[in-house]
Image (cartoon, rainbow, N blue to C red):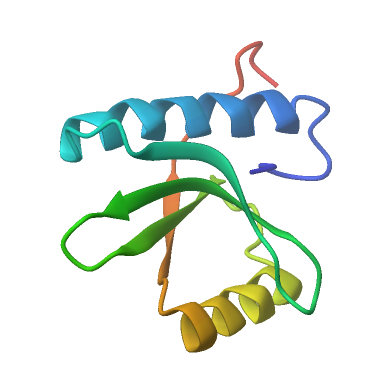
Length: 105
């Protein structure tokens, strides 16, 4: 979720954006089956999605990756997400959240 590598508060910014999206997600999906920091094994290493929502209709998960401001969706994240989609059928949606620095960076 890091916002920019030059900002000393980038982790805090990412966590704020993540938390805001979590609140939105619980309103979009009124279910107890929302998981944060959801880990999925891939041959490229473990993928930790910011959120996963279990869909009882399809028996699959919808995955969400929260990115604050201009933080990167990395090549390794993309590779893992592609593998997850191809092998498990779980799609990852990247969510961009505009988030101000909590201390005015």
